[in-house]
Image (cartoon, rainbow, N blue to C red; front, side, top):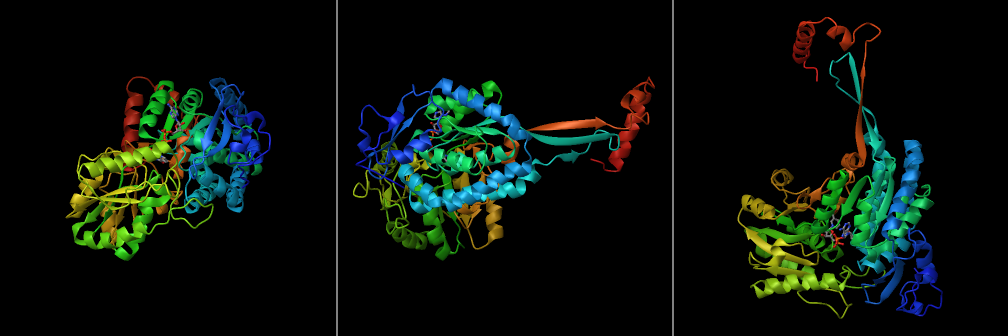
Length: 540
Ligand code: NAD
């Protein structure tokens, strides 16, 4: 990936009047081909993204205005009709190629993801792996999810009922900054396979990663205008909801409520993947050798800026001290770093705003009597927004970090004396996104999982096994969202069920009208008899 502080190239459309082009970290030859994909009439200004690793200006990205959003959806709508008419095999072929390309070209996108989001390379790789995994799953299983289904009709032999799945049309995907590649594509993949077009609005900080994804889809053979990108903030996202036929939103619960209200006004479907306050329970019989590194990963991957990240650590009192004696040093050993390689365990927070929120949550807990077992410091020696992985103990009930999503490298410890108490603590939140249970006895962990109010419960892992299971629906209960990504559910969300029900037997004079023509109570008595027979034969 070419970077420059001393660039002499012309930025063309990208000129930010406040800054000379030499100020940007990314070379114009990297940025210009990507931003050409944005639907913009160039009168809505530019957004200057910042490098989380250094705080320096990263790139200037042109923004879309409301009229551009309308134009983008219209282009997508025009392209969708032909796309829906192509065979499922052809649509699958494009996604199959995408899955191969993303693995082959990973070094390019790993650099870009790291530079835009500040995350570690390992966390960026998890995005690449997710896209490849999602492509493979839908290429193989998608045809089954989309196949016509025969279902029981009103009168078994005389009614032929089938259910077809029809694409909704144009799906709007609104994505946050924390997983810029995977959240641009993971809902677009099933939507495209099902015959929809997609208009994508990434977060302004991570627009280039999303544009790279659009470029890769084009290289994989996706015809023009089937994945169109608009750029901007909340106003552009809101305008998108006003035009599309379904919105797949990933972001905070606060914004999700606004998107849901707007989608409700328009009577369009909405998939809402929102925030969490995810708990992890280490039961008394857990294998601590496995649990320690697994829990470290569960809490601190992507510096905690992961919707499935663990922020509440629930320890059975019998193993709590031993667990912490091993866990805390492992947390202290985590290497923070800004390199475009695999040397660092943890990267940066994405922005000053994110750093402020994390600092405020930790300071609030400490002021109310919590103890920091690790971290609780801003690591400005590594970069402007780095924060040390933090473990808090004795956190009082009214601490903000026990209730509100921190979305940073901070975990609060609670001790419990039984599995029942653990379930109570885990469910004591308005959220219900992800939870984790560690136990040597998987059957016991499954019984605990059945009582936990969360869309995913991962046994003996924090999040990756669930995220990587593209066939298993993923999403939130309670304030963590509506609908699911992954699996059949993601296809159902972007298709309409259409029932086509045929009356049979007309030529043999067996129609309902023939029956009704008999007059009086004869039809009712005949139908009553037929229903008794069907019940006795247990026909569905
Ligand atoms: P955010 O809600 O501020 O922004 C998300 C996206 O919505 C951005 O693209 C933003 O520009 C856009 N947006 C803002 N206002 C809008 C409006 N009124 N209408 C339409 N779009 C609008 O979220 P964020 O802070 O960028 O992201 C972090 C949040 O995302 C966390 O809460 C995290 O838990 C959540 N998240 C959830 C999942 C999941 O799968 N459940 C995955 C990743 C992140």
